[in-house]
Image (cartoon, rainbow, N blue to C red):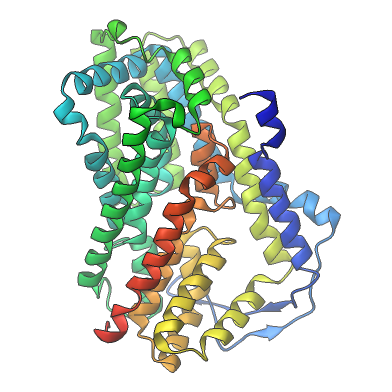
Length: 466
């Protein structure tokens, strides 16, 4: 990037910290309020009838400075996850197996143009299915490091490489069919039969997935025709030169490389089993990648010292990502400590109660998207909002099933562009893409999906969606 461009480029870390400061300012303006929490079936929920205004806790400069530290502690699991992923992929690169495998795949796709046209839709469909069925989200991070060089090698750019796993899973997340972390928890809180209303959610998933694939493919075709039109052209040029993606003649897969890739692919398959059948989450996944890094390092002929250095160097490359995630979590710290999160939710609910059911359901979606600005855990947001939204739906003529749908739209389609989302900022950090660049690229798609969500919330009222 040229010096002139750098002067006008707002660093992602600066941007997020400015948002944290804005949240602190709101604590001086928005009245404090809180709901009482109750434990039901082992889950902490808010009591919708318990809201009361309390003394506000304005957050001053000292709290703003401490918030990222608290955010680092609250986001410790995902930060460790990112650091270990960085270490594992550093080791994979050091063995040569990853780079040469990507070159090898690039040659295969390049020599079979009829296969290349299926590359984006097929891979995005797989990630969308994963997002829809078991809530793939943080798990997309490792794949970003694989798909970026592969996309570049096929004539696309790092935006396409990032979008394939990340936006693919996001499309499925928004159109969740069986996702236990969003639909499952939200329906249980709303006292609906588990995974009821599946037929309409399948329709939503199909529309969401097709739309996201179309968005990425249209852009990819334009970049393939003229790579210089890419907003990340200079970044990708440096990245391509660094790993020599353009030199397909050196794509030699040794026996050792093949064993490493077999172990890695087998590990990913077992990882899916662990998530679906063993209940693995972020800690187990992080530990699994640690194991993959160690095993592949030894298979690749690296000594113990080299493996340790690999993890250290890979983690070091991820420290910027870790700081961004910590600052993103700091926003929630400020909102909670300032006592404004519950009062905002209470006042939002008051507005919805006076609206027509169709408009009310659309307003629920907007509210869920706003709350998602602060709370990025699907299960956490469900626990916070659904105890309020479910009974509110009853008194406004909105079905509880529609309230769940509004929740999953707000959590799914809005999340990929939020600068306060730890996963979004973690993905962009791994990709080396500034949030401002990503936001400009996604703007029209985000507007489209916002309108699509509003439209998809209209039929449930007329089809008596319960």
